Image: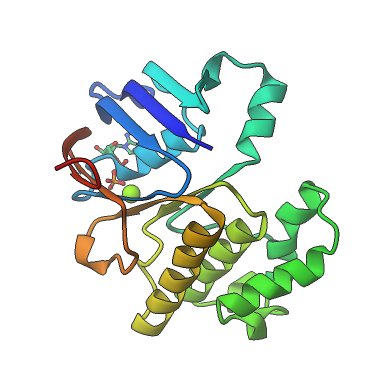
Length: 224
Ligand SMILES: Nc1ncnc2c1ncn2[C@@H]1O[C@H](COP(=O)(O)OP(=O)(O)O)[C@@H](O)[C@H]1O
Ligand SMILES: [Mg+2]
């Protein structure tokens, strides 16, 4: 799936200024887009607009060429199933780690949810946490579980907010490997927001630098 933002502006309700200003950006199959910029530059807001969690105040969000916000509620729901946003500080639900990872699969009525969930936990090196509760996890472990929950539903677009923030070196490399494989073998489009560019261990196809809600620079293939 391809998500394209066209002249997107976004203002939080009650705020006097725009958190996003005149953004044109595409994230499509096979891409890994890094979104970088200082705190408050608009990375999280941008990911949430890409994830269709926020509707732009001005401008359009195209999903495979169709104007997302003009679609019916049903059409939006089915498109939303194909993309996943992972919060920087994810909320896990009551129940075990395994329950959390299986939840999205159950909602999507995927068969063999338990095996699929365990395979993903295994790939991320956290199979041994399967029966733990959410309060028995460190911040880094919770971040890995949230990532597992996102990957398990096999989205076409994966939008990750500061995914490496709480991870140690070994986990960063492991996550980078898993993401690279999803991207190169299944064509999953990935966008990664991070405030410290150097901390992103994933090889990217495009880097978008935000400053004060606007794109300050784009670097990558075909961008010179
Ligand atoms: N819920 C909110 N209500 C009002 N303003 C917000 C809200 N969330 C973020 N902002 C503002 O929007 C701007 C961009 O924030 P954000 O997208 O979170 O930046 P980043 O993720 O790059 O740190 C900041 O000026 C921030 O203060
Ligand atoms: Mg943020």
